[in-house]
Image (cartoon, rainbow, N blue to C red; front, side, top):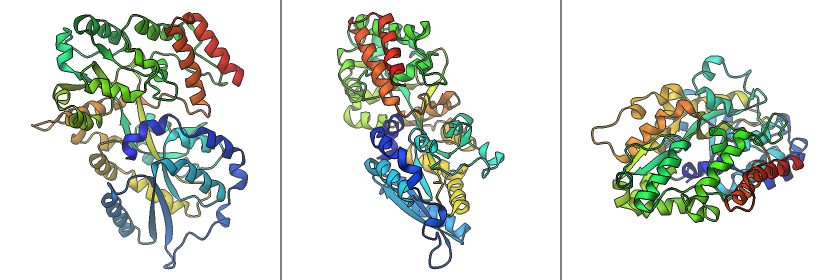
Length: 435
C-alpha cells in the first residue's frame, strides 16, 4: 500500500526517466486553452484527482469525502483516479508533457520539486491566503517550496521512531533508550558486551535506505552548499565518517550492513538479534504478526538524532499542474482534502500523521486510551516529535548519485581500504567533478 511505501518514494524517484523527460517537458506541455474544456455535460467544473494506490482500502473514505465536497460545491464534480504505485511517476511525467495532466495529483516534495523547477506546477503563493497557509506545520509547508515559491499543499506524513526490545535492554543493563548517535554508540557497546548481540542495524547499501545520509544532516553536516558543491569535506564531515567506521571496525554493527538493505534490519529485530529497530509505527503490526513474542516486549522512543535534534519526516502533498483549466476548483478541492477535519479522519483511517496544527493537536495523538496498545503508544511518540521533524535530504536531481558516492567511500573507510580523510576527500572530489 502507498502509505507504507512512502519513505521509499520520498527518498528517491526514477531519476533516469525524469532526466530524459525534463529537458523537453515544458516545451511539449499544453497551455490551458489547449486542453479539453474542464466542464462536464451538466456545465459543472470537473476536477480530475489522482492518488497513489489508495484503492480498495480507502475507497469508501474517498467516495464519502468526494460526495461531501460536491454537496458543498454543487458547481464542481470530482473524478477520482487511483494510480498504481509503480506507475505514478511515469504516468504523471507523460501526462504533464502531453498536456493531459490531472487537476490535482498526490505526489511527494522530492519528486515534485524536480518538475517545479521546470514550471510544471501552479504557483500557490498568490492563491492561498496567509491564514490558510498558517494552518499547516511550517517546516512541512517549506518542504513543498522551491526558490521561495510554494508548489504544493501538505497532506499526510510518516516519521520514523525507535522501536526497542525491552528484554535485551534489561539484559544489557540499559534503563533508557538512546536519543542521540553518541548515546547509540555507548548502547551498542553495552549490548554487545552483555548479550553478544547487536544494538541495531543500518544499511550502507547505496540503492537502499537513506538513514546514514540523513545522519550527516542530523549531526550538523550539510551535504551540499548553495552552488551544489560538496559541503561535507570538513572536520564535522570527517567525524561522521569516523563514527560509522569505528562502529563497524569495533564489531558493533552486523557485517551484513554493507550488503543487505533495511529489510534485513527488520528480520534481525524480529529474530531478537538486535535491540533497536528504526522504523514507523505501522511496523508494529507486521512485527506482531511475524514475531508476536518480540512485539510483546517492544516499546517506542523518539527517533535517534544528532546534536541538531533534527528528525526526518516523509511527506505526501497535493499538487496542481500549471496547465489545469480549473485552477480555482482544483485549489478548493485540494484545500478541502487537506483541511483539519479531513486530515484527522484520514490519519485515523490510515495510521499516518496529519500536516495541520489543529489536527495534530487532537487528543487522538496526545492521549493514550486506558488499554493502550503498542501501536497507540508509538502513534503518540511519533506525533510528539513532529515539532522537530523536517525533510532532511535536499531535493536534488542527482541525490541518488550523491548517496552512492558517499556510501561507496564510507564503505571503503569501514573496510580499512582508505583512511577517513582520504575517503571524505575522494567522495567530495567525485561529486564535485560531476557538477
